[in-house]
Amino acid sequence: MNGMELAQKLRSIGWKTILIFITAYADYVFDAFDVGAFHYLVKPISDKKFEEVLHKAAEQFDKQKTNVKNTDIVRNDEKRIMVKRGGVHTTIKVSDIIYAEVFNRKVVLHTTVESIEYYGKLKSLEDELGSDFYRPHRAYLVNLKYVLKYNNNAIFMQNGQVMMAKQNYAGFIKAYMAYMKREYGEIFEHGRSDG
Image 1 (cartoon, rainbow, N blue to C red):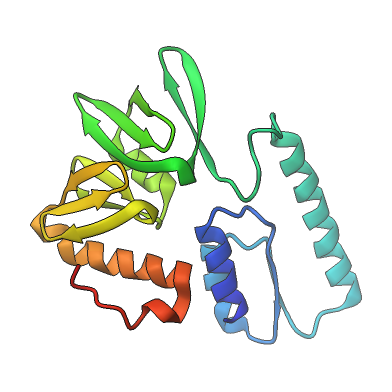
Image 2 (image 1 turned 120 degrees about the vertical axis):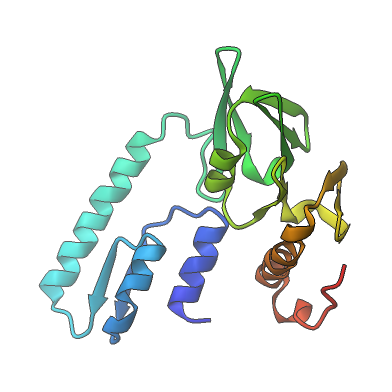
């Protein structure tokens, strides 16, 4: 795994770590933007420039710590989202979301603990949750972590079953295989992908 791949993996699991790339290759500078790198230094670099970047990174780190209002709720390795229902703001650990569905303009989050309803759009939630989630049907968004089995018209989750739109089946398989490879590495690459 190279540094860029490691950075992508860290970002995919929700790490907000400040990343600084130090490399001899200028070619990957645009890839660094994709993973939200703080800086991209191309060798050779002067001690003065290195010190300046580290100083700015430390300032950024301090700002991030200051912006966290409740350190009991937010941790780098536990990405959370916040939803508002009935005037109450609730934080939900992303890794606890099994799947979400939309019903009567409400999003229902089915988590390992409870089901939570709020007014919102599934598309906004999909954009926020990232690559560990997939939308197999316009009414559902599933956490790939909790998929037990699937076929071309349904996905069987830990706590229920969701519909699969036939046109999304190939995309689901691709997303699920990518997830399994991220989680379990090369050992999964040789498994069957026909559900």
